[in-house]
Length: 241
Image (cartoon, rainbow, N blue to C red; front, top):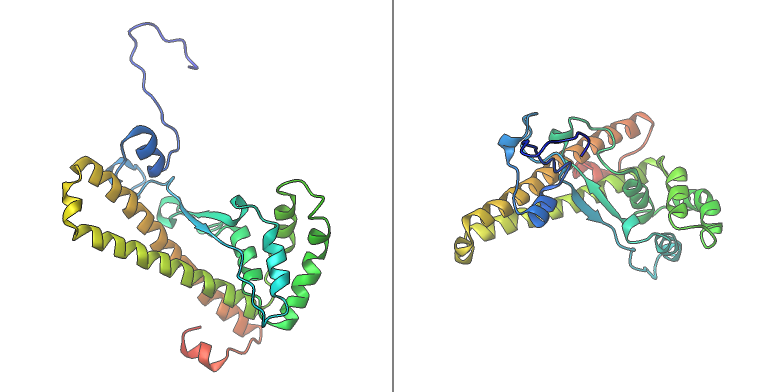
């Protein structure tokens, strides 16, 4: 307590910035759209977690072992990233975590010249990885991997992220539809159903907004690449990249 309150005074508890998941699990209630003064549709402190895994080894790719080595230096927490809804933040910058994009640039690398650039950039971080304190490798990695490797790699990176979010969006929508048609769902107490629905709608909004943002980034990046002389392969052009 900051102020000295007298016995009998009315005081109010401030829960602070809490996601819907925290409110449900910790306090047993949710806040709905009418609770947000800014007019947002969901809790501005809600996040959606995206977790990357170490790419499976590919015997046909000589650089597969190198990519595996890089990912082997990340902890589970450093491979878990959180995205928010654009409509709750009102900002686009930093929508996609920089470390997530940097890791995806490594994960999707495919051209020999890109592998060479990647090896040069990561030479110093990898050479000191074994003797570094926890978190140091990730910080050094991000420092040297904030910029694109090549236009092709950057487009592949964003396309991979788009596919990942599209998949998560599809499974979330399918789960909502399945639950609405499930007779067992109607047996759940109305108050509990509401909490779950508010949580899932918030997750759905984050995914929808994130997908829209990624698609815009992909279009902008493709435009910049073409202006820079990048030749779009016919098959990719037909698919809208």
